[in-house]
Image (cartoon, rainbow, N blue to C red; front, top):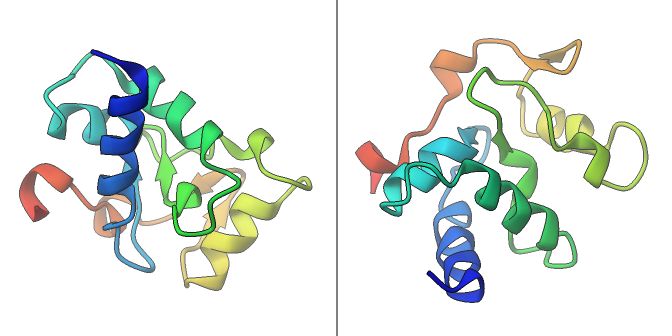
Length: 108
């Protein structure tokens, strides 16, 4: 699997995450038929920060933790972006994660 093509597929899924919802790296990987590639989805999200059309802030780890926040400019940008969409975050953890979770395998 070529990473450039995989990254493009990841971005196509990420662009469909609804405003105010979140998904996980693993959920995107599973949807793309690459169940063991959650880390690669993370790399794709990290590489996407120059593209404002890709809502990388809506992709978190499987427990709802903002594990990618250090890749955003500033110390709290990822959290601020989520909170601007009505997502509550406390101690780098999304509150009501199960309610806000968007599963591309079920939604797309």
